[in-house]
Image 1 (cartoon, rainbow, N blue to C red):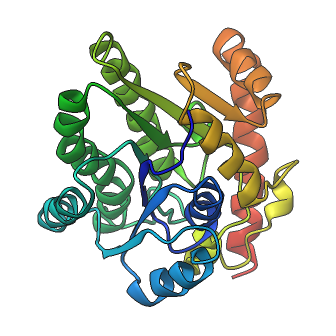
Image 2: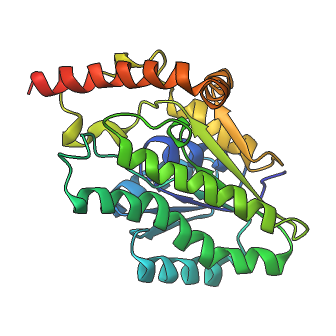
Length: 268
């Protein structure tokens, strides 16, 4: 897809993967809609994008709030009259055992990571179908395929996103609208700035990705017919192994991440 003058809506655009993606699409001369809760961060990013595109729109919006999402959608469509790519990237994680997390902490992750994606998709999808073209990119995680101790509630949101995306992709066949999921391994973003990650070591994983690497995958996804793009692609070997040899892989994953969780709890 030639992204020149295409309208790209990016949630969670204030930092990390969302910010990196906004810059890359702006360099392609797209019209960028920046969506996040922190307006001051969005305005700072908007200033960065001026050198690449003269068409950006800042929308302060909490995607877990369906009313705010509807208002944001109306603003986008009133301003541009269309949407070409929706990137559902907003999300966060709270680290801790299910027995230690409150119900509200578990719910809040599902409300933003999963239902935020639902609200944005439901509001923009009818317009994409009416246009006869468009692409939805849902940013999930390799955690959509692995249940990991310490982030079980987060994994649940990504499992849900991947399942929903697969079903919706089938439904969209023949409409001109497509959907692709981008599933990275751990990424070095403010996602880990949450206080629950105090004493958490990112070295517990073999690789931590730069947000730009994932942003490149999102750019590719916006013009891809694939259901899921795993980043890095070699991580798909792990997903395949887990699906085919769960009795071998699951104990390894469980043991590795339980040790990290126990080490973190002891250092509190």
